[in-house]
Image (cartoon, rainbow, N blue to C red; front, side, top):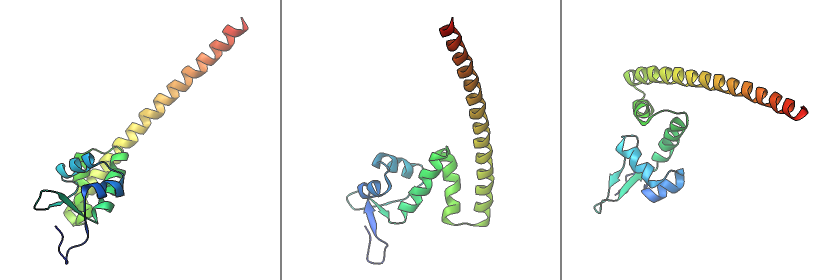
Length: 131
């Protein structure tokens, strides 16, 4: 539990409400080492107020398609910014950007193929209706 010298803490339910992340997801994030909590004598999780901003970063990275494993490699850069950590994070980010770029390329190709099928189908339906 927080002492007078500690920053404000909150229970998992409050953190879930503030971030829009379910308590179940928060427990998963903690299991993966993405967020940290302390425990009360009764075993309840208590999170520092700074975890709200951390969870916003984590959500943005998940939304970008990164896995929890990759996010775990990037989070130390958020925490410390050390040279070695920064280099590892930079390398990881470049790899993820390349993966996303390749995914985008495949999606653009799939959309183009679908556009062609839509055009063929549209012409067929117009011809069938005119006959």
